[in-house]
Image (cartoon, rainbow, N blue to C red):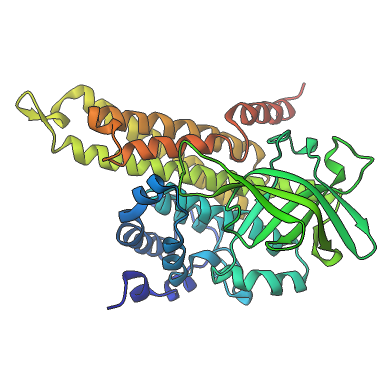
Length: 411
């Protein structure tokens, strides 16, 4: 008997295309009919295929390879990769829509999904040579070789200008040395987009950074510790170690000084996808708490009849809808080629902090049961906390928003 994913097949995704500008005049945040059909189909797939084992991956801290295989049949790993390289060519609006639905049932799978589709693969799509695209994109689109970023270091996270990993050109090859930490999809990915300093005279300067495509298994490239995390425990977060790693000259993706600009543009997409994960987790916890409240009784009636609890549910719904509106507005701006530094930062701040408030209230509604691992709301609470770091902390985001505002209102 065919699985649900096999019954649907990947043809559903092939029909997801951007149909020009779409006004936000309905409850679907401007999604086209095809995007809305895709969302509903994906929701059913996630509930049937991904949700049942989400707690298992979390408890065992195991990477969900089973989910990777199921999602291959839906064509999800090539969602944003152009059709000529085996993908679906979907836009960032479709990406965040898919991320919300996956995050609603499994945060670990969602972060693996969006970091493959949202940044590294897009870096190759936007900046790679034709040879690089033909070599790396088709297997990525098939889900055979996942992508990962190699950016954060022990002494530099949000501050990319403080990177110390170096790449020295020697003849027709670069020699790469350094360490990268908190790498999502580390060790499970086959292809890494690694940021390194190629200009030794530009220490602590963004203009000295370059970007490389590095393959798992190359001599001098190994893996260090796997982080024992509070949440997103089914997502692999692993240290990358480069010790005289030889990188062919043709694997330079973007040299300095353009590499930092590339990072700055792509990180806006990552912040959108990060926010989408938070919204999905909050939505999942909210829906579970709402159903629970209509079944649980206290003092002779359903706890959903108590006004205090009703107001909690209302507050949760308000915050989720506001975050969605901000997210889709920013996603449409990106598709129109509008610079979205301020908007992506605002969206990430609100979505990150909203998810923590909403999942915390979901735990409160379930009472003591919400504090146990027998119910999914505590996992949602732990998972959403991790998104406050990737793509920049809320504190850094606020500083960036302020910097943009001061430019706009300069006297």
